[in-house]
Image (cartoon, rainbow, N blue to C red; front, side):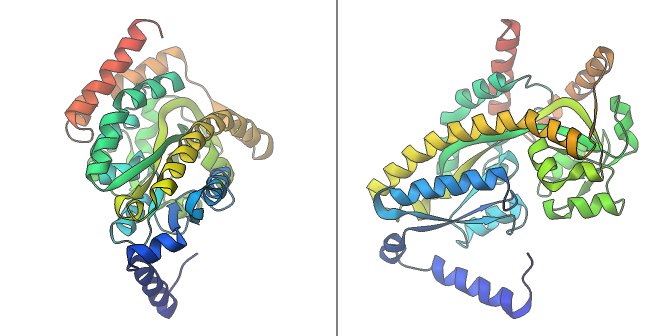
Length: 338
C-alpha cells in the first residue's frame, strides 16, 4: 500500500503526535506499533498476531499494532524506529545489522551453517553479547527467531556456481559492503522487497536468494520456476522494541512481554523450520517448481569458492570478535561430528 500527498503528511503527523506522547499517556494505552517486512496474511504475520493476542491478556493489556509489509525494507523500518514512528519490529539480521553489525554473524556466513543445530549453537553462544550490544544501541530483544534457509530461485536452472555469473540477482538495500562481495558471484540488483515480482516480470532480475516461506507466499515460482536445493544461509532475526518504549511500560507488563515473547520465540522457530520443507513441496505441487540438486563435486566447488571470501567478511561485514566466535563454534561442532 502506498500513501501519497496529503495522506502521507496526515499519516506522518499522526505518528509524530503518538510518538510525542508523555510516558504516562503512552503507558496508559500500552500500544506498541510493530513492523515487519513479512506480507499481511502470511504465516509469519499470523504468528505475530497470535503473540499480540497474548500480550493483550497480560498486565497492562499491551496491544500490538502490526504493520505488515507496509513500512518499506528493513533499513527503512530501523530508521522509523529511530525517530519514534514505530516502537518495534521483527527484523532479520539484515535489519538488525543496521543497529549493530555483530548480529550479521548469525546469517552472513554462507554455506558454513549445515543445519538448525548449527544455527542454535551459534545463536546461544553469541546471544549474551548480541543482546548487550543491541541494548547499548537502545533496543530490547524480546525473542530470537528464524525464517527458513535461503535458497536460490531462478528463471534458468543453476547447476554450478558459474551459472550465477551471467545472472542479475536481487539484493536487499542498506549494505554496500555485502553488495561489493556479491559482485564476485553475480550482478547484484538492489531492490526493495515489494519490487521483487515486478523485477522478475520485467527482466530486471533473473534470480533471487530467498527462503521458501516467502517465495511460496509471493508465488515467486510463477516467474522463477527453478530452485537450487542448497542451504545458502539461515534467515535469522529477532523481535525488538526500542528502549524508550520499553521504559514507558509498567514493570509487570515488561515481565509479561518477556515471558510470553520468549515462549513465542521457540514456537516461531519450530513452525518456520517445519514449514521450510512443506512449502517447497507445495510449490512443486501447485506452482510447478523444479528443484535442482548439486553433484557432490559441484557442491564442493561452491563451498571452496565462497570460502575464499570469508577473510573479506571478517572485520568488514562481521566484526572480528563475532566472526571468530561463530566460526570457532561451527568448526568445533563439525570436527566432533555434530
